Length: 341
Image 1 (cartoon, helix red, strand yellow):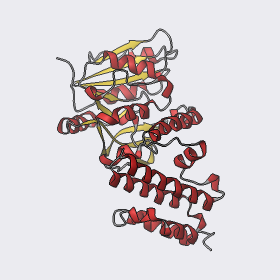
Image 2 (tube, rainbow, N blue to C red):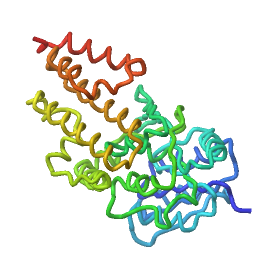
Image 3 (cartoon, one colour):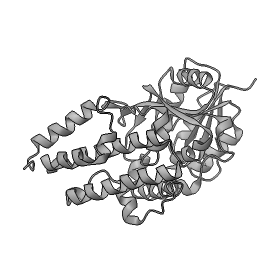
Image 4 (cartoon, one colour):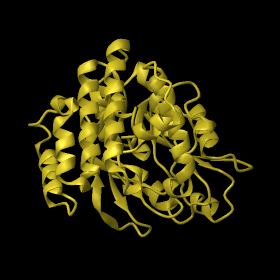
C-alpha cells in the first residue's frame, strides 16, 4: 500500500536544524506518511545526521552535486507515492497534528487542492519570537490576494497530487517558486489556510527572504505582471511599483503616492469588470481592503490621510462592520499623527 502523504524536504548543509525537522515528522499523530529527504550534496554533517534515522518511512535521496532546491523538490515529487504532497523545509518544524489536520480538511473538501496554515516564528535557537503569522484570508479571496502578494507559508502547505502540474517547481522562479506553483494551480484548485499554527517557521540570516531579498522582488514582479496580463493589463514599471507597494516612496510624497495608488486600484476594478477574470464582488472587496491598508501605511499625513480615504469611492466597497478594528486604527493613527494638521 502506498502512503497517503509524501513529505518533501530538500536539504543543503542543514546540520544545525535537519534533526529537529525530521523528528517533527516522526512525532506526527498521523502515521501513514513517507518522508523524502533530498540531500543536495551537503558538505557538512548533514549526511551523518540523516544516517542515524532508521525508520523505513524515511527515504534519503542523495545528489552527487549541488542541484538546488527546485531540482531537488522536483526529484522528490517524481519519486513520491502519496496521494498528498506536504512541504517542510529542513530548518522548520511541523506541529504534531499538522498532517492529520490538513489531511482531514482535504479529504472533506474534494474541490480544494491546497491547504496551508498559520505559522509560529522562531529564532535560530527555536525560541518563539512573540507572534504567530495569522492570515485570515477566506478561501474565495486567496486567488485575488495572490495578485498582490503571497499569503501562504510554503512550509505549511499540503497539496492534492492530482491537482499539481507534472513538473511543479520552476527554476526560473527561485526564490518564490512556491508562488509560481500556486498561480499554476489556481485554474484547477481552491485554496484554504487553516486558522491554527501547524508549523514553526525559522527566521535566520540564511533564510530565503534574507539571502534572496532583491531577486525575490524581481521574480515576484514578473509573476504578478503575468497575472495582470490576464486582466488585459500590460503594467508599466511605475504601475507595477504602485501595485506592489503599500508605503509611499520611502516616506516621501505620501499624498502623491496615495493618488497614484487610488487611480491604479480603480483601474484594476474597471478592467476586471470588463474581463470578468475574478468574481467582481470578491475582487472589489479585496481591492478595497488594499486601499485601506495603503492609507493605514501612510497615516503620517494625519487628518489629510483620513480625508483622502473617506472621499475615495473605493472606501464605499469596504465592509465597515467586518473591518471596524482596522478602520478604528486608521482613524486613531491619523488623529495622533504629528503631521495631522
